Image 1 (cartoon, rainbow, N blue to C red):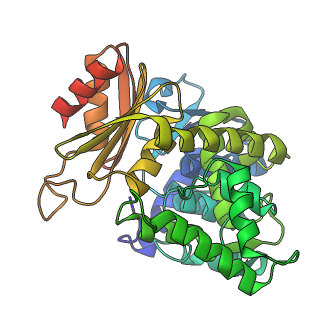
Image 2 (tube, rainbow, N blue to C red):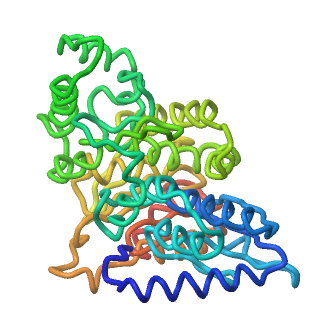
Length: 387
């Protein structure tokens, strides 16, 4: 959910109130949804708690509602979900968390907050992030090219989950494409532009790309280079945060807290990306009225669903389902008319379908996740009915 409709004073009051509640707590337990935005937000809040001496614990989970029960001596803060004594459900939560952390503990990290907002789908400078860009200005340089977390271009392009192209998931395929460009050893602006053109054409060229693909790939282009961050660009930082939150939450927490977790986080990002991109090529797919479904084995369902929805799905709702979990995303008006008002709530549909099959679900209006005790076919039927 964009925060662009709020006024600055409303955000400030909200941040001040939350900070006051945290300041009075004996112990703070942060329960974050497993995505890059919530992970970054929990890191911002935890660092602020550490600064002012408030004991805390951080956990990252696909189903935050299951962990909101609290003892009398602790305050539960849910990040990216509802419930608990305090909740930061808005997207991007990183903007709210940055303000709360600043109120609570003084200086907060605008680069981490910006990476979290980008992981939520925001473009730097839009959706309330302009002040984060301004606060981090001395650490950022914008250049042509593609957002990657590493300086190794083949590694970065092959494992990016900011887009899906014909070469995605395979370093050797990227190396072959780059060899055709004849790039210099030291990349200048012209070389970066040629790489960006390669990505844009590979994503939106002939094949089964969606009309939305050409627009969505823009968030991976013209990166903000980081002078002192754990990763090469803000977009690359966001990509790793999102992947590691789902692949290795413990490593993600260490990264968000500012510990040296770069190497294991990158390993998790590579594994996550390879599996997600393979799903787009290998999964069994089906098309229904308004719904595109990919049935597969154990995969990062949330990332696969996002990539399918953005780059391959011909329908407004996309579902990736295995035999015990599923994720769904909605794009545009979801085929229900000219307005989103009457469109189905994806999170609600996932919750109802998961509960019906002995599990649980969660999500927002446009994204959802569920675990269940059934097979993929049964869940698909329950989800379609819930929609």
